[in-house]
Length: 198
Image 1 (cartoon, rainbow, N blue to C red):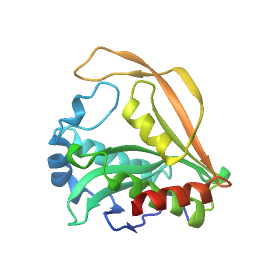
Image 2: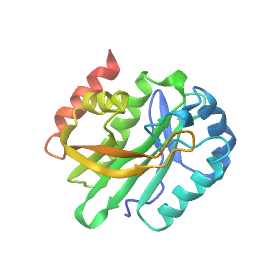
Image 3: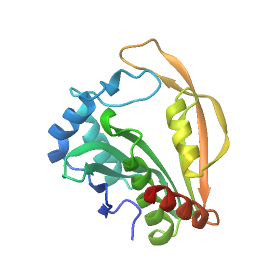
Image 4: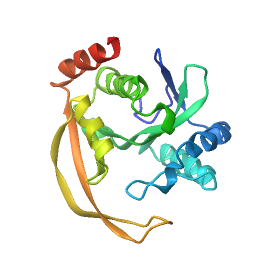
């Protein structure tokens, strides 16, 4: 089994399905909720760049370095995107990232459930030894969300990337790197499962 092989993960609040170009219009509607592409500290496609972003993710899947998902709500409407990325199958590691949700579903059970589904599949089916999360130093909402999952901060890559946001000046990104190890996952699983029952 390749880490980049398409898979569907079904939850109570949402499902993760293989990304296709058929999701384009729904994702354009989702990203308009909150005009997410205007956030300077992250990179989220706009309605005009959505097709290009879907093509990019599918291209990386063909190369074996990404497994892209469309996030659907309980009514099968697209509400965001996420991926397994920076896949290193030889060392049984990957990153969960390039994730965004329409504003109206942020800070709901959906993100917790999606992360739990992705973590369970990575550790129990793909036999990963570690799963990473990375985010901008100034993306405090994302950092709090990652920390609530139970991931630990491995370190900060200073001057890691140059951000070229179309609506802002070029800036240097410091990247916070978090991870969950396979030995830590049973506790993380119990913690997230408990949160979803509250």
